[in-house]
Amino acid sequence: MSKTARQILALVIILIPFYGVSIAQKILFSQADILVEEFFGTYMLLSIGGILTILLLNKYLLKNNIQVFRANNSKLLIDISLALLLLSIFYFVQSLERYTYGIWLAKDIDRTAIISLLNKVFSNTLYSLIIIGPFNWFNEGFVSISIAFILINLWSFSNKKIHITISIVATATIIALLQINNGWPSMINSFIIISIANFIFYKYRSIIPILIASIAFQTIDLVGYWIYSL
Picture 1 (tube, rainbow, N blue to C red):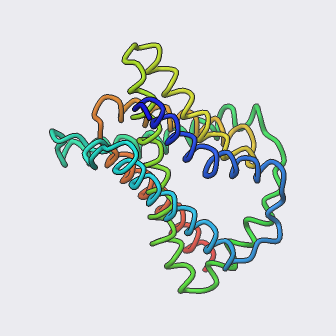
Picture 2: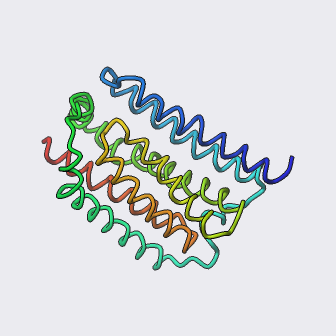
């Protein structure tokens, strides 16, 4: 099997089961009756399974080493600085939404189910620590490493700027579609943030900034909700 064929196969294995099925589920099925245990079990297993699948595909199918996710010349100080930049962009985009397209594209979204689920989670100290800790780490870890994996393989097909740009936008669009059940403002937020994160990954070839920023953002958000719900 040629390298191109192996790369296409690797992309299909990640995109269809982990992203395609998840997007379809959000469109077709209600998550109103999901249990806390089911929520933790399903998403954590998918995240852990996704990370392991990517690492195995990268090593055994594509014959790449782990350095494809972080260039050898990457510096920790630069990674942390970029992570802080990304985190500030996250909050800027969130504020932008609140005062612009969040108003223009406002739509009543029934958040009763997710609020009820979060209230159940944060009413239990152990569940609270799990969702802020391992659940958050594995979920954001999978998103970060899968974005990098998809982009690395797409960019290997061509180094033309138009191809690079389309890859960045297409990947951001796929991630944004995961917010389809939360309305247009959430999808736009996700698209803008992931597009910028993808560009930073293209320039610096390290997933560390994306990983740190996404985990930090979710941790702050979840801790804030926990404190508010006390």
